[in-house]
Image (cartoon, rainbow, N blue to C red; front, side, top):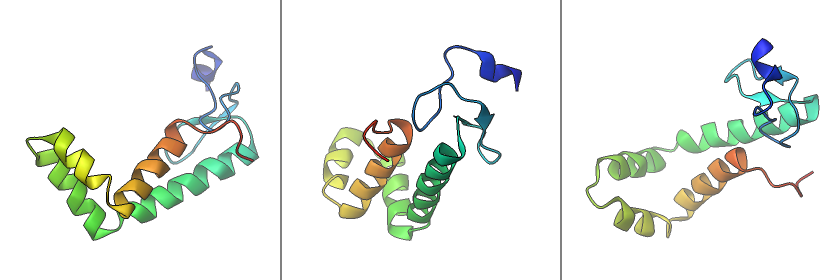
Length: 98
């Protein structure tokens, strides 16, 4: 894991210096607590992506001509908002979460 010595690499949960990588997706994390948090968020995201309605929304968005218009419409759908929030929690974790 020599790549973890790079100064720009941070824990995906708390943004501290990582010591390990997730065996499933290879993202860096620094502790068991952060690994459990990452694993929980990833499990929620996976479960959301199993929803056929959300999958259809994603395909429509990907294939749509006016993506901005579709995003505005989809952000009115609670399922899509939950998906977007889950993604944001993974890539931009809150410093105030336990």
